[in-house]
Image (cartoon, rainbow, N blue to C red; front, side, top):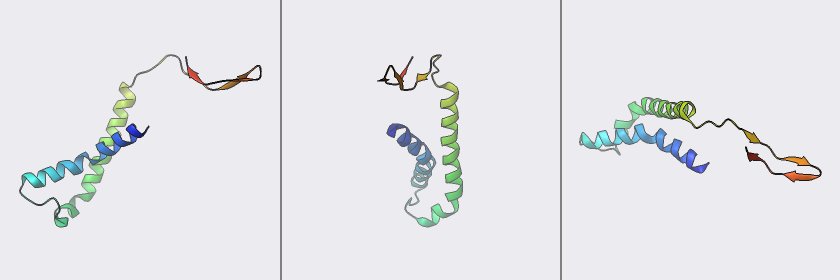
Length: 85
């Protein structure tokens, strides 16, 4: 689960990293607040778009199983753990 959260955080940060690389390429300081201030809204929207697109693509191309998850249950007084069929 942690890997999935970190993956989405990395995907969200891609537009910010690309903008910082562009500032370096343009020989401007990526630490200059004046260069970032007008771009925050666009960068956040681009990051959200990348994350949503990755979630949609994962949902469309993810592996499907015909059998589902069987939750834990009691049989004859004993707990049978949950498992995938």
